[in-house]
Image (cartoon, rainbow, N blue to C red; front, side):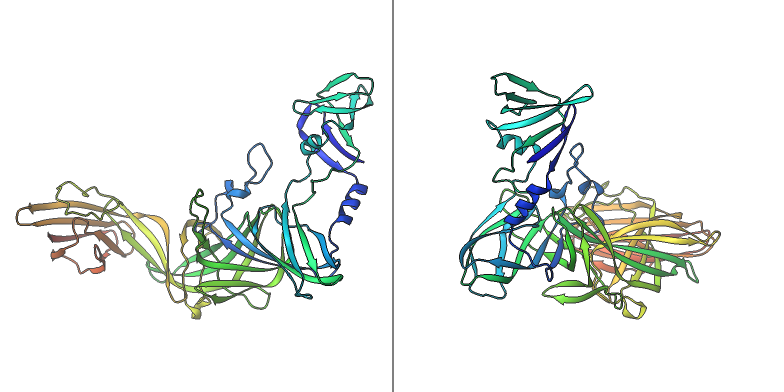
Length: 519
């Protein structure tokens, strides 16, 4: 007997209860699984942008209680090894506990103990048991409905005629009953074609009968990971230096519709391309991850093709509808860091054009903010020196007055190889400001030249001197020459120059330069 129960006057709050006897019968129809020795390995790829994905992507869809799994930007390759008992010749095998978001076209089946065993046909059955589906299966069939009448419970048995807006039953005496409020529905049995779990059904051909060790691999969506870094900054001997302690964590979201108990876990970091169906938007696969910890069975990193593979040295459990954090590597301490102030006086924008820009007033708007960055090198001698996957970096600083950590900013980094610089933007300086203005402009379109002069003032209200990098875009044309300047500069690229400028404590420094464009 199968029974479902509803709360009075609410179809949407109905709960399905299936008796243990029916579940036992259903379990007997599944392929026999080995009591011991079943293993699962999962490799997770992430398509999330660097940093944690927005919480709304993994919270339940409002009003449904259903996780927003289709929006989780990642996927995984799952490999499961099980002992399955097969008949000689052709037989049907049901393989349960697979992910609800499995891609059936990626499934591979291998018998490790009998190479001659193969799958002739495969069906993925995802029509799972629910109250509404049971009711549809029992149209024109007898069911029993229980209703609360006062303090009593009354049963009514009849043929189900409709389940669209309440239940309509025809009893044995020909009476028609329209029921909206009821407490439970009893069904004689679980109808065919419904499963309690997503199930792969195979038509298998085996040269011998008996238990065989099998391996099944498949790809599933609804699962992703990213890296999170926590930095603690402490001031150094001067205003431009300091020390960092860095801790790294991996966050994994599993909304695939399956749990992975005691699984071997691998993570891929790099940009892996995948072909997408034409109607769907092209999704670039980003995979984050990095670093290695040793004794506690942490992550071990190695190069893998043109990507990086991170393998957890112990098994872990990834429950369905969960978020898990795992330490990426041991905390690195006393990393030398440099505080960098950058003044980019030009309003940000796309400053590359196919023709010379001769408009006098173009690009002369001034931004007063001086941005603050922390820089450190991903260097082995300071406990790093391993590929850092893309992720979000949060920075805190210790308040010496009470020993508390205070948040001072966060940024995102892309995949960073070893021995490369990491730059983290924290915000804008409070006591250092800039001012940029155009002081001269001349153009001769017939002679194909243009000259422009800028004055940049930096004011420091701190009680110690600071170094500021003034960033300038030479946006008007690609052929340019600095004809006069008050400070030396470095050329960063074809249209960007940097002026390192020192500003005295509670002082002001003025930078001027003149640029000539020709075409």
